[in-house]
Image 1 (cartoon, rainbow, N blue to C red):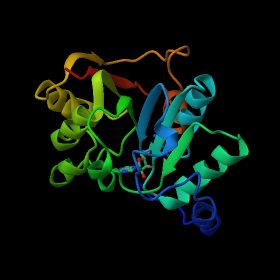
Image 2: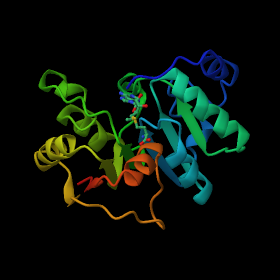
Image 3: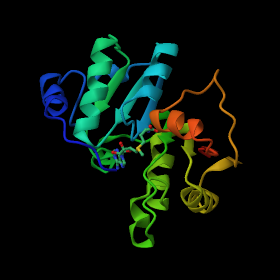
Image 4: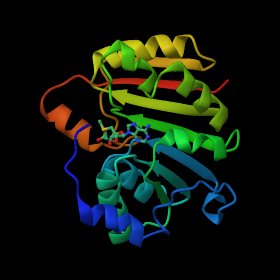
Length: 206
Ligand SMILES: C[S@@+](CC[C@H](N)C(=O)[O-])C[C@H]1O[C@@H](n2cnc3c(N)ncnc32)[C@H](O)[C@@H]1O
């Protein structure tokens, strides 16, 4: 994804180390919460902000690798006085090693970059190596919830999930937005306005 460099946003991350962390410390008091959710690739954070406002007892971990984008989200976290979102402006792969097994109740992947070229397949966030990590990171019966407009990525992800350890997998070809249990992302708002079909996969940890 191409994004304009925003110096203020990058500086904002540096100035707000309580909101934006580089290293994952599982013993941080933030994680003493009844439920912990992870979103990988939060973008500017519409989704996670909506859910975090709706569920104050759940603590949300947001990972967004583009610092100009992550800085915009950090500002929203501060401006909205959210104390249940912690942001990691890094590539999620750098965090995996520090996160213990069975840590999250749910992992959200929203409109992940499709990486359409075959040679880049291993970068897709539903590539089987990522699914193995998600399986490890989830609590028993925890879920991965994935939404995309990209049919190629959806079909690829279907195969990856079918060949994974996940169970009770739902493939929703034409997902009708569920206002009560879900939240719109920036991309979803745009794609739905363009009349695009949204696909969704929900998979449970065995
Ligand atoms: C297409 S955007 C979608 C943003 C948002 N989820 C939405 O639906 O509006 C995908 C986002 O995922 C981020 N991303 C991709 N791979 C990532 C990774 N390995 N770790 C962290 N963030 C990642 C990108 O920087 C980008 O902001």
